[in-house]
Length: 299
Image (cartoon, rainbow, N blue to C red; front, side, top):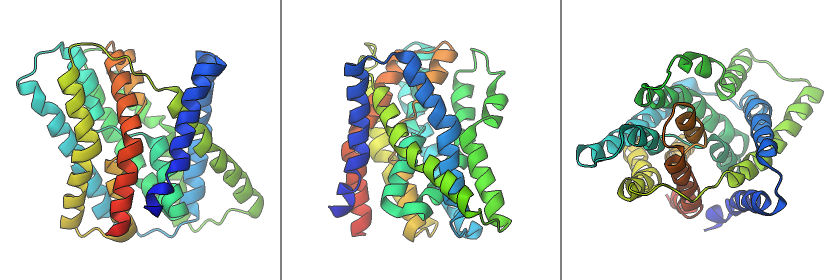
């Protein structure tokens, strides 16, 4: 119970973001700027700061990554299953399909940091950095009818990947940041969590399109229940334990990424249904993530 209570401040920040969006009327341009600041500056600084300060065991990371990729694969298979008997527009299905396995990096790093500190951020950062290319590749492939030419450029310019890679290169090289640089990165890292979660709250939308209720409910159950269970079984089978096991279960239990909406809109898909799923999984994770965290603490 105590472990679950530690997550309340993070989810309170999400609700604060929703309240600010509704009552302060700051405009879409303001929130777009906040998201860019967090995504391109603050979160990479958080990743570099945490990874540089954490002792790494790359051999132990291989089962972690294997479990993460396998769990995402389970999500993809479960996302494909309803297509056998559901009838819906192809682009609507392709847009919503990505919600079965994509993950919110802001919440991932916030939860890992709150529960496990810098080692948790470093471990989650490794998993997130490795999984982002796979998530983007599969999502764009499903929406390939509308312009996939920018895929590799998007992956190459992803700041989470570069932040993770930079941190690991500096760590493996034995680089110890000077005190002023440590303080600078630390200040940026501290700002990233609060602003990132507020931005998540500001993006909540609960007005989905009609006719996709069953598929929406199915994907909600897959993301918040089926994937964490899959991570538990796969992780145990691969010998994961300790921090790596806890991180991978929490990674599997994350709500869907806000970037799923951006991709769907950019490629001519059903952004409204995706926005509903992002919001529903985010609100649902306020209950499910503390439950998974409490289960991990008890086991």
